Length: 540
Image 1 (spheres, rainbow, N blue to C red):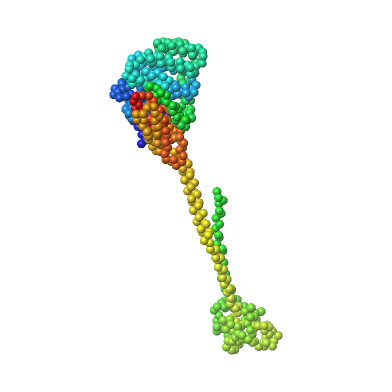
Image 2 (cartoon, rainbow, N blue to C red; image 1 turned 180 degrees about the vertical axis):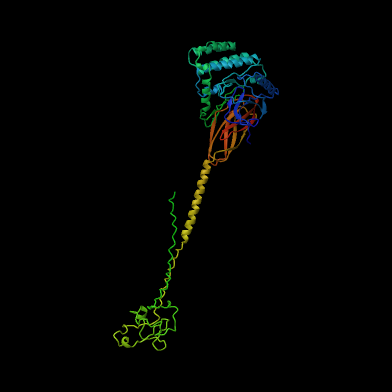
């Protein structure tokens, strides 16, 4: 089962580091503020440990000294005591040295002077630090030098503070700083003299630094070198982690030996919209204009469709009609002379009832020089041409029949559409799996084979990490009771792999009984932790 080991809803934001009195985590509070969280080393079952640490913190806070920040009261959580500092305890001088930060000897002298002044204020109040070390001296982003874990170690050990031990530790710290960033010269000689002097009197060492500051570069008077070193350290990428945690063989010792672990387009189809064929308009024949009779007093026009059947030859209305109209029309030429012309208009003969023929007499009769034209008759009527015949109706040809699609073409179209959909779905799934990041859902830690009462054994601690099945990298480190945190390790997770096992080989030797805790601290892809405890019991 996944468990978060930080108390009060704090969430770790980076890897842990070792301190003198315990293990530090950078963390963020529920309100978004950054904090430093210290898990103190196991203190046994002494019920007064928490009260002593709380009293020491209150005494340090009462000094109101910027170089001695005090955390709040200790919190008991997950079987240990915890302290929550108002800001992350980083970077330390050890972090700057291991990160290769460049600090001149003037900045080193400034660190020595400020730490000495803070210790002098602490000693004047009857308190002792107890853990002056490169792991307990931090530098803030504005270049301020502070001491952390102040007065905690004496409270853990239930002993009074020892100013003499703090002075010796300060002198060793100054010698380490000059060896780390100094070059042979007058400035280094000055710092070494002050270190020897500070073993007995911190105030005298600070006065010597101030009096002979002309031997120091400008970094002693300002904090620009420290600010630049901290900024470069925080901006530098983390060191490349190793891939597997291994442990050296256990060396026999009388004390419980816990050796440190060494980390190992398709072309667009033109839409062809067929244009409708132009509809053939049927020419509706218009009635030809009625031919009028050439007469000074012409009667109103008479249409062919409405002739006067009572018209008689010789009447005043028709006496001036000429006897010939010229060549016969096609219709008259196609009619036999012996056959009456059926025009729908009855013709009339002089002095008789209307008949279908007319034979004039006199000079224009059949025997005269102006006889009827050969091959036809002379029509005589009301003076209008025969009715025009309507043109034949031109039937519109039927539209060409649409070719019937074959079954194979229909099937191939459906299969092509299905294949396209399947391809799109596969591409979408692939992109979703590639773009979706790896997530850790839970982590549990267990010891499949507890040591029991066996001696000189190696315990296999197994962390089972459950993920969402995406591919990615898990970055983690192991934390062991009373030991320095391991380096950052990585584990590659393949796609579809939802469970990952991470192993810690922890070797024990010697006689005795102890209860140990192994904690896995996963930093990426998301911060999560898990822990387990077991008992090593080796009796003679």
